[in-house]
Image: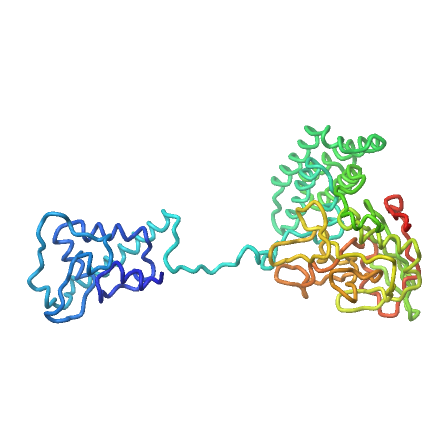
Length: 483
C-alpha cells in the first residue's frame, strides 16, 4: 500500500502531514500514535487539529475526533465512558499561532525519532521503502577483490582434490600471500599466526594428512611431510623469516612451502574423485595431471627474446599443465591428440587476447561436450555454461594469463571444438568490473601455461607449433578400446 493511501486510512480527512511522516510511517508506529491521541483526555484530542491543520470548511464540517466511522478504521476508538467535549471554536478553527507552529516542528522531530526507534527495533521494513543496493548475484562483478586465482599455479593448486586437513593448511598459507601485497607496514603478527595455525594442523592431524596417500607412495609422502614441517624452505623456516620481517625471504619461503604442500596433495589424489556420466565412458580421459611441452617456431625467420637473459632464438618452449581433475574429458582428448601428433607443424594465428591453433579436425569419432567444473561442486557440468552474474565461478578460471582452453564447436556452443585450442592472454584492462573476463565460464579451460608465459605475447600470426609432446602424465591417460 502506498504511504499516502495508508495515512488516509488512519488520519482525519484533509489532514496536512509533514513529508517525513507521510513517507516513513510504519505499521508498528500506528498503535502508538493512536494510543497517544485517542487514549487520553480532551487536551490530547485538542492537540490533533493543531498538529494536522484543516482548511476552513465552514459549518458543514465538524472534527469527528477519534470517531471510527469517519476515520475509516476501528483501530481508533474513543474512550468508553466520558462525554465528548468539542471546543466551541472548532467549527471555525483559528489560524495557527506562532506557538502552535513551533509545537508542530517540535512534534515532527519527536515523531521522526520515534519512527526511527520503532523501525530499528522491529524487523518490518518502512512502508514504500525501496533500497538501492547491489544484489548478491551481481556482487562478483562489482568486487575488485573477487576470490578467483590470478595465476596458473594458484588455480592448479586449488583444483587438487585433497582432504580437508591439507586444504586448511593451504588456506592459511595462501592468506599470507595477500598480506604480503600491503605496501606499507606489513602485518607480520597476522602472518605468524597463520603459519602457527598451519603448523598446528599439520602436527595434530598427521594421520589425516598421510591417510589418503596410497601404500606404494607412503614413503614419498612421509618425506614430503617432514620437509613441509622442518625441511629447508618448510614452515619452520617460513616462521623464522616472518620473525625477521624480511618480505623477500618470506615470499621465497612461502612459495617453497606451497610447492611442497601441492606435491603432498597430488599424492592424495591418485585419480578422479567422481564418476563420469555413462555416456562419456568411451571417451579418452585424463585421470590426473599431465604436462605438454610445445616448441614454437617463428614463421618469418625472426627470433624470440627471452625475458630473463639468454640468447634470442628462432624457437621457444612453452610448458602447459593439463588438469584432468577438473576437466577429464577435455584434457584427455587434448592429450590423446598430442600423442597422435595432431599439432605438429600446425600454424597459429592471433586474435583479440588469444593465440589459436589454426587447425580443425573434422571427425575424431566423438564430440567433446563443453566441460566446466563450478567452484564448490564435486563434478563438472556438461553442455552448460556458468552464470557469473549469479555468483557461479569455475575451478579453472579463464581470467588467468596463459590459460589454455578449447574453442567452441562450429555447430553448437554446447560442445567444444574437436581439436582447436587457444592460449588466453588475459588483460585486466579489457575485463569486467570484478576483474573477470567477459567470457568467463563460457569455455572449457583444461590447463595453464607454467613455463614460457613471456613467449605468448611474442607469438604472431603465421608462427607454427613445431612439436607438441606429452612429457609427463601419460600413465594417467585412459583411451578406451574403440571397439
